[in-house]
Image (cartoon, rainbow, N blue to C red; front, side, top):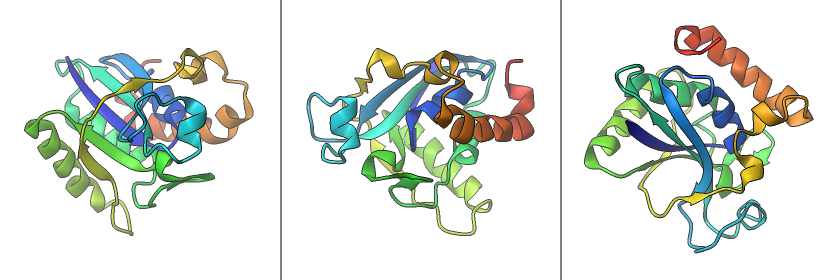
Amino acid sequence: MKTFVLGGGCFWCLDAVYQKTKGVTSVVSGYTGGHDPHPDYYSVCSGTTGHAEVVAVTFDEDIIPAEVILDMFFALHDPSTLNRQGYDVGTQYRSSMFYETTEEKILFEEAIDRNQALWSNPIVTEVSRLPRFHVAEEFHQNYYAKHPEQGYCQVIINPKLAKARKYYSAWLNA
Protein backbone atom coordinates (compact mmCIF):
# COMPACT_ATOMS: atom_id res chain seq x y z
CA MET A 1 0.00 0.00 0.00
CA LYS A 2 1.06 3.56 -0.70
CA THR A 3 -0.29 6.76 0.86
CA PHE A 4 -0.22 10.23 -0.69
CA VAL A 5 -1.12 13.34 1.30
CA LEU A 6 -2.72 15.84 -1.07
CA GLY A 7 -4.38 19.22 -0.66
CA GLY A 8 -6.66 20.55 -3.38
CA GLY A 9 -8.88 23.03 -1.57
CA CYS A 10 -11.63 21.72 0.67
CA PHE A 11 -10.83 18.14 1.70
CA TRP A 12 -14.45 17.09 1.16
CA CYS A 13 -14.01 17.31 -2.63
CA LEU A 14 -10.98 15.06 -2.91
CA ASP A 15 -12.43 12.69 -0.34
CA ALA A 16 -15.65 12.29 -2.34
CA VAL A 17 -13.84 11.19 -5.51
CA TYR A 18 -11.09 9.08 -3.97
CA GLN A 19 -13.67 7.21 -1.86
CA LYS A 20 -15.14 5.99 -5.17
CA THR A 21 -11.79 5.08 -6.77
CA LYS A 22 -10.84 1.45 -7.39
CA GLY A 23 -7.83 0.36 -5.40
CA VAL A 24 -8.21 3.10 -2.79
CA THR A 25 -8.46 1.45 0.60
CA SER A 26 -8.63 4.54 2.81
CA VAL A 27 -9.19 8.29 2.58
CA VAL A 28 -8.63 10.32 5.73
CA SER A 29 -9.30 14.06 5.85
CA GLY A 30 -6.84 16.06 7.89
CA TYR A 31 -4.54 19.01 8.29
CA THR A 32 -0.80 19.41 7.74
CA GLY A 33 1.88 21.89 6.79
CA GLY A 34 1.36 24.37 9.59
CA HIS A 35 2.78 25.40 12.93
CA ASP A 36 -0.14 24.83 15.31
CA PRO A 37 0.50 21.59 17.24
CA HIS A 38 -3.24 21.01 17.83
CA PRO A 39 -5.18 22.27 14.82
CA ASP A 40 -8.92 21.90 14.52
CA TYR A 41 -11.32 22.84 11.76
CA TYR A 42 -12.09 26.29 13.11
CA SER A 43 -8.47 27.26 13.71
CA VAL A 44 -7.40 25.98 10.29
CA CYS A 45 -10.29 27.86 8.61
CA SER A 46 -9.12 31.04 10.31
CA GLY A 47 -6.01 30.89 8.14
CA THR A 48 -3.72 31.47 11.11
CA THR A 49 -2.32 27.96 11.66
CA GLY A 50 -0.43 27.54 8.38
CA HIS A 51 -2.11 24.17 7.85
CA ALA A 52 -3.71 23.02 4.61
CA GLU A 53 -6.84 20.90 4.38
CA VAL A 54 -5.60 17.60 2.95
CA VAL A 55 -6.52 13.99 2.41
CA ALA A 56 -4.31 10.98 3.05
CA VAL A 57 -5.16 8.62 0.19
CA THR A 58 -4.03 5.02 0.71
CA PHE A 59 -4.16 2.82 -2.37
CA ASP A 60 -2.99 -0.48 -3.80
CA GLU A 61 -0.60 0.05 -6.71
CA ASP A 62 -1.42 -3.43 -7.98
CA ILE A 63 -4.91 -2.08 -8.74
CA ILE A 64 -4.34 1.60 -9.58
CA PRO A 65 -1.05 3.21 -10.58
CA ALA A 66 0.30 6.10 -8.52
CA GLU A 67 0.30 8.22 -11.67
CA VAL A 68 -3.47 7.84 -12.02
CA ILE A 69 -4.04 8.92 -8.41
CA LEU A 70 -1.90 12.00 -9.08
CA ASP A 71 -3.42 12.82 -12.47
CA MET A 72 -6.89 12.64 -10.88
CA PHE A 73 -5.68 15.10 -8.24
CA PHE A 74 -4.74 17.62 -10.94
CA ALA A 75 -8.06 17.13 -12.71
CA LEU A 76 -10.12 17.64 -9.54
CA HIS A 77 -8.93 21.12 -8.59
CA ASP A 78 -7.28 24.17 -10.14
CA PRO A 79 -3.58 23.85 -9.33
CA SER A 80 -2.85 27.20 -10.98
CA THR A 81 -4.57 29.39 -8.38
CA LEU A 82 -2.52 30.36 -5.35
CA ASN A 83 -4.26 29.81 -2.01
CA ARG A 84 -7.69 29.53 -3.57
CA GLN A 85 -10.18 26.98 -4.88
CA GLY A 86 -13.34 28.63 -6.17
CA TYR A 87 -15.01 30.46 -3.30
CA ASP A 88 -12.61 28.97 -0.75
CA VAL A 89 -9.79 31.47 -0.22
CA GLY A 90 -6.77 31.22 2.09
CA THR A 91 -3.57 29.25 2.57
CA GLN A 92 -5.60 26.40 4.08
CA TYR A 93 -7.01 25.78 0.57
CA ARG A 94 -3.66 25.78 -1.23
CA SER A 95 -2.79 23.18 -3.81
CA SER A 96 -0.25 21.00 -2.04
CA MET A 97 1.48 17.65 -2.07
CA PHE A 98 3.33 16.36 0.98
CA TYR A 99 5.98 13.68 0.50
CA GLU A 100 7.65 11.29 2.93
CA THR A 101 10.32 9.88 0.59
CA THR A 102 12.50 11.13 -2.22
CA GLU A 103 10.65 8.71 -4.51
CA GLU A 104 7.33 10.41 -3.68
CA LYS A 105 8.84 13.86 -4.22
CA ILE A 106 10.02 12.79 -7.68
CA LEU A 107 6.59 11.29 -8.50
CA PHE A 108 4.91 14.56 -7.43
CA GLU A 109 7.29 16.71 -9.50
CA GLU A 110 6.80 14.45 -12.52
CA ALA A 111 3.01 14.72 -12.10
CA ILE A 112 3.26 18.52 -12.07
CA ASP A 113 5.35 18.46 -15.25
CA ARG A 114 2.99 15.97 -16.92
CA ASN A 115 -0.13 17.96 -16.05
CA GLN A 116 1.18 21.47 -16.78
CA ALA A 117 0.14 21.12 -20.43
CA LEU A 118 -3.49 20.91 -19.29
CA TRP A 119 -3.39 24.36 -17.66
CA SER A 120 -2.87 27.71 -19.39
CA ASN A 121 -1.38 29.25 -16.23
CA PRO A 122 1.59 27.82 -14.32
CA ILE A 123 0.86 25.16 -11.73
CA VAL A 124 1.61 26.59 -8.27
CA THR A 125 1.18 23.37 -6.29
CA GLU A 126 3.40 23.32 -3.22
CA VAL A 127 5.57 20.21 -2.87
CA SER A 128 6.84 19.86 0.71
CA ARG A 129 8.09 17.25 3.12
CA LEU A 130 5.22 15.86 5.19
CA PRO A 131 5.34 17.13 8.74
CA ARG A 132 2.86 15.74 11.25
CA PHE A 133 -0.52 14.75 9.79
CA HIS A 134 -3.46 15.69 12.01
CA VAL A 135 -6.67 13.71 11.46
CA ALA A 136 -9.66 16.01 11.04
CA GLU A 137 -12.73 15.69 13.21
CA GLU A 138 -15.04 12.73 12.54
CA PHE A 139 -17.66 15.09 11.08
CA HIS A 140 -15.35 15.69 8.09
CA GLN A 141 -14.57 12.04 7.34
CA ASN A 142 -16.43 10.70 4.28
CA TYR A 143 -18.49 13.91 4.33
CA TYR A 144 -20.07 13.59 0.88
CA ALA A 145 -21.34 10.05 1.50
CA LYS A 146 -22.95 11.20 4.75
CA HIS A 147 -24.41 14.49 3.40
CA PRO A 148 -24.95 14.28 -0.39
CA GLU A 149 -28.03 16.53 -0.13
CA GLN A 150 -26.06 19.45 1.39
CA GLY A 151 -25.78 22.55 -0.80
CA TYR A 152 -21.97 22.43 -0.92
CA CYS A 153 -22.12 18.83 -2.09
CA GLN A 154 -24.69 19.62 -4.77
CA VAL A 155 -23.01 22.76 -6.11
CA ILE A 156 -19.30 22.10 -5.62
CA ILE A 157 -18.67 18.37 -5.22
CA ASN A 158 -21.17 16.95 -7.75
CA PRO A 159 -19.48 18.73 -10.70
CA LYS A 160 -16.11 17.33 -9.57
CA LEU A 161 -17.60 13.84 -9.41
CA ALA A 162 -19.03 14.34 -12.90
CA LYS A 163 -15.61 15.40 -14.17
CA ALA A 164 -14.00 12.35 -12.55
CA ARG A 165 -16.61 10.09 -14.19
CA LYS A 166 -15.96 11.74 -17.56
CA TYR A 167 -12.18 11.31 -17.52
CA TYR A 168 -11.57 8.46 -15.07
CA SER A 169 -14.63 6.20 -15.31
CA ALA A 170 -12.44 3.11 -15.77
CA TRP A 171 -10.92 3.76 -12.35
CA LEU A 172 -14.15 4.48 -10.46
CA ASN A 173 -16.47 2.09 -8.68
CA ALA A 174 -20.09 2.12 -9.79
